[in-house]
Image (cartoon, rainbow, N blue to C red; front, side):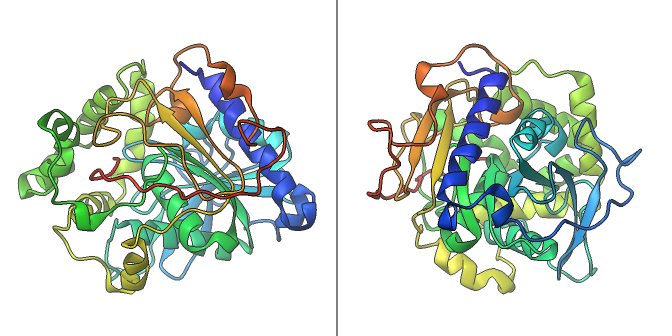
Length: 370
């Protein structure tokens, strides 16, 4: 299996390869606008393992907490975390490598996590996919950034996929763990094989008020179970779990998480402000930007109707699937060596040129990832 070091190289290679696909073949600095806002206070001492201080960007709905690593005039790369995981644990090793290649890494905390806060008490605490994607566009706008690379897994990968599908003019390229993550809510009531349904146990748990109470009372221990089951080869430490658990004290955490899992199964209405976005996502739009996907062999969560990785197809100028990545939490997991193919740059598998033909990026037909 691919090691954390090799995975870091894969993400770095993907980002570096996209540099040549910028409009006009410009330098990394050409895609960036102005530096982000000044650092603010955050967390305990305001710093997090090599990612620097917690900064804040104000959108119309949120005060988004984030880290920034790399030159202010570098090509922006938005690195998004999943649930229930920490952006620090996920990208503390990846971001410095990208920064050394001249990229400006932006690592936001999703709504309901860490120091990210809603600006108004009456705003719908939605966790739906349309909201996460829109948050990422608003984040770019708040920083004055026109276009960026997006990379993510789980919730963060879904948000990145939404941006790439609906706002391709804002997305230079995409690195997505577990391929196409845009939820097909219309198909959410179609049952899977029982052996696959068990992997979605917390989806169904969160449909109940008992599940809401369980998340409220047992945030850390519930995450421990998810980490063990979804990443069976990840030997995480208690310190890593404690660091992540600090993010789940956010006052909106439970509301956002519960709504996310109920909405994706069609059991809760969405925020009306995202109705148009959700209508477009219901069409399972293709992703057309340059794309690298990563699927994990040591993944405890179901990956498709048959349990096999989703097909590595995309209507994109450059698309390959890297096999194998560790699991759904790929940026932080650390099993060992890689396949020869994982050292390739994001070009056509059969030629040294970036292909000009396109293919459709196939939607998944499962209830979705975590």
